[in-house]
Length: 281
Ligand code: BTN
Figure 1 (spheres, rainbow, N blue to C red):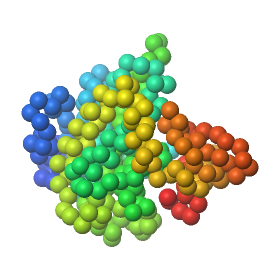
Figure 2: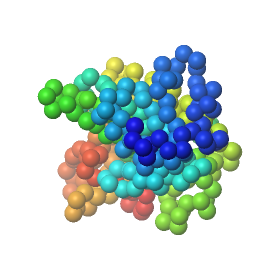
Figure 3: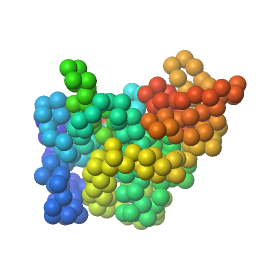
Figure 4: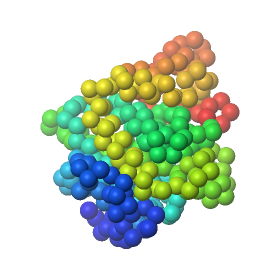
């Protein structure tokens, strides 16, 4: 673990290692692999470094704040102290990367379940990687893979989740007030971040066990909660914007669409940003 990652180890009373462990079963397999930080650059960046140095599958990094939180497509992810959960877990599935195309979908389903179970809120999923409540973003997911060039198999995957928990409307910067929300804002209740974090960790553990053998069930759950389906969407790629109707999710988690000229196609998440016709949703 690099020096930046080990500064300020688990001193925050709201989100602490001891409180997270207290909310996990005694025999939970990942218990001894959980690391908490007050501040870190990015839990995904640190997890990738740790994985490259041989950290076990199930190693988890949780931060109270990130100074360089990262989102999809090179975007930043705002991660102020005392507000959210910023969590990454290292997975080591022994399979070709093509078998993990639905990983982000599986994480979205798992984390939604944790929020529903722990906070009584059922988030929708905006394809591909955002959890949404009241048409605003509650959480984002960033999955990153490393492939062994000799074997062609996955060396490790890092799954990162950033969850807005305790913010009030005026805690978000002006550019996010219309598009972001938090569990506290939506539930009207105080949030025990450690309890929610433990629920997320348990859901992610179950998710990685089911990932390959229950792929169809995972994708069915994803489709059932995907608010993008049935919408008119705007597909923004490098130098292009296309309009389409979102029809379905394919078996790799791709978005099946019908473009305005009548052609159909599949959009994969690596390349594009999908927006609603009139804003974020
Ligand atoms: C997105 O909305 O595009 C994805 C956001 C993912 C943010 C999480 S916070 C924990 C982990 N560490 C990061 O730097 N990013 C992910």
